Length: 195
Image (tube, rainbow, N blue to C red):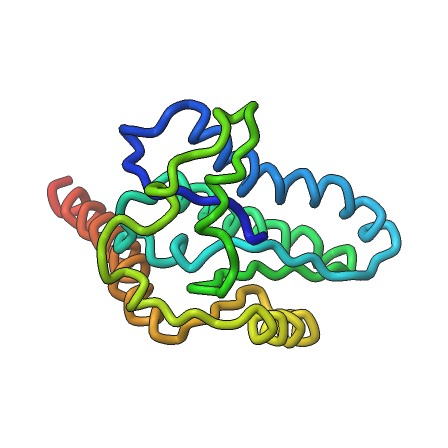
């Protein structure tokens, strides 16, 4: 399973809800890296792949999913940073940011362990906004596996599965961050002019 999810506004989530998402989606990846990387680094070979989500790349367009998006954005940052560190040891790293994949992730709240509050109502297992699923291309897992194998062979940093999300990434994350860089350049320019 690529992780766990639930569709609920952050302000309505319990501590157990958030802990469950963070423990599985982010700390699950961290724990695996801590367990397996020392041997791989010592042998100076291998490649690690962690599953994030395209929601981390198109966060400005994803509603009622903030805690999930935060965990998956953490995985993106973790893996891109680890990629730099692992390069010195001959170990590759890739982060998979799938859009829709035909898995049972929407069923994950039904199987939530008791330590995180137990199973959740079926209503929290599907996207809130009607029509969201129609915008996502659901790929079969075997196609995604082929994409990941190609990325490992070619030592690619990131794998995405839905090319239609590129425009959302550019309009959202890229434009927002580039605008912030423009703002600080204007701020510095104005400060120099005022001095």
